Amino acid sequence: MRPGQRVLVHAAAGGVGHLAVQIAKSRGAYVIGTASAPKHDFVRALGADEMIDYRSVDFAEAVKDIDVVLDPLAGETRARSLNILRPGGVLVSLLYGGSPDEEQRAAVLGVRVETLLVEADHAGMNAIAGLVEAGSLRAHVEATFPLAEAPKAHALGESDRTSGKIVLVVTEPASAEL
Ligand SMILES: NC(=O)c1ccc[n+]([C@@H]2O[C@H](COP(=O)([O-])OP(=O)(O)OC[C@H]3O[C@@H](n4cnc5c(N)ncnc54)[C@H](OP(=O)(O)O)[C@@H]3O)[C@@H](O)[C@H]2O)c1
Image (cartoon, rainbow, N blue to C red; front, side, top):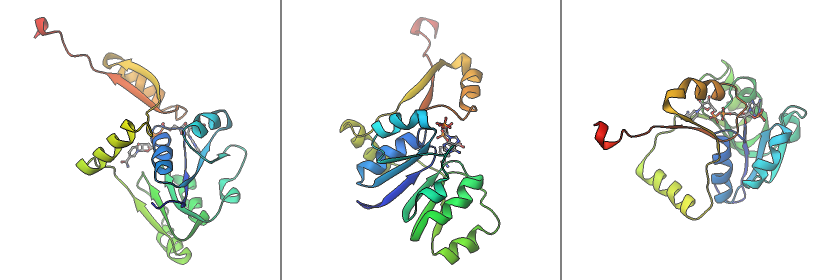
């Protein structure tokens, strides 16, 4: 990602999206996010330059000439995101399973699709730590649960409506209990 590139982050208020917005911004990108309207202030405060209320506006009509789309949603959103890329642009999906004609459509449009499985590595984690130390990256925690309430945490996560991360706290047993 280069300074000045136009980056669109779908589900920009979500666990992945709200971090992606900040990382793209720290790289000098012009960042556009999709989220429902009540979450726009939250995402703008993280650095988004422009927000689209996906419930009332068709993102595929609202923006064009995008260099990078980050898509944690897949399905129809993924398919329609190809149309907003400029030639040479890339759609980065976090989920497997594009439509059968995706490759052909991408070739016609002159764009690429990358399906990404995030794997932590030393250089990447160091770069993230640097952003955190510099105050350019922070994780928003929507809710915290003790490990015993993991099912509740999963149920909340599966609502697809949360902002930021959900944290499970694993308490070390006191040394006397060992
Ligand atoms: N490949 C990998 O390595 C990798 C890594 C991490 C996560 N993932 C996957 O990425 C996906 C997303 O994870 P996540 O933790 O970021 O999800 P999440 O936090 O649960 O996402 C919730 C957010 O999605 C928004 N949202 C739902 N439908 C939307 C739509 N149509 N358009 C725009 N925003 C929408 C909601 O906003 P509103 O409430 O405003 O609707 C909410 O803020 C999951 O399927 C996860 O498994 C993959």
